[in-house]
Length: 192
Image 1 (tube, rainbow, N blue to C red):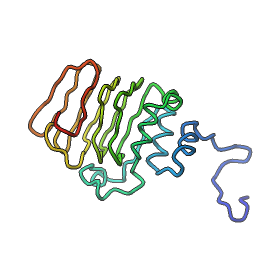
Image 2 (cartoon, one colour):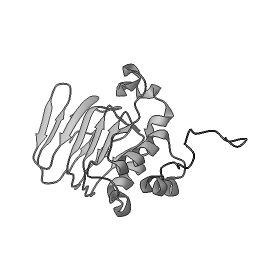
Image 3 (cartoon, one colour):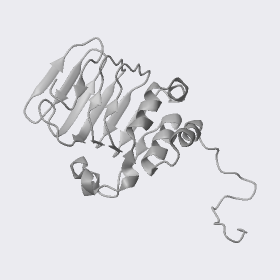
Image 4 (cartoon, rainbow, N blue to C red):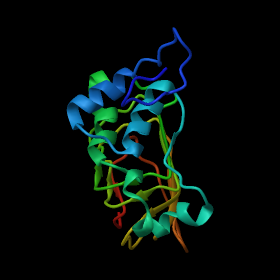
């Protein structure tokens, strides 16, 4: 029987809810209140699964319609950066890496000089700023059907990118860009 003023969470007697993942505890301590997308990001990173912030139907999930997205789909760039660069947090990310679906990243994502031990993938995500990768070392960066507001030049507005250790390949509306760096030494979202 639920106590007055509480909600029955349908947990059988004697059972306890699963403990909160360590990454989520660290994130709450560092960032305070988290959006639904941020909470999902930290849970998924530690559990080795995809972080979903997708809405109900296809129209709502089109990243070109980001202006109409709910605020719960926004993840602060600092949340992703800390998972990628802070030794304590990145050690808790599984070998599956960060796999984002339908998330809006609210500002420039600066991974310059970062050394990621895992992959970073985004599908139908919206980036409000550039992705900075000067002297970054990445296993894989995969961006599929992502949107970057106001992009001109190499990658176009609706673009996909696969960055593997030796090759960068970005496809814009009418052109393909290929380079062969030993590390990622450019920023995406600007003409390089």
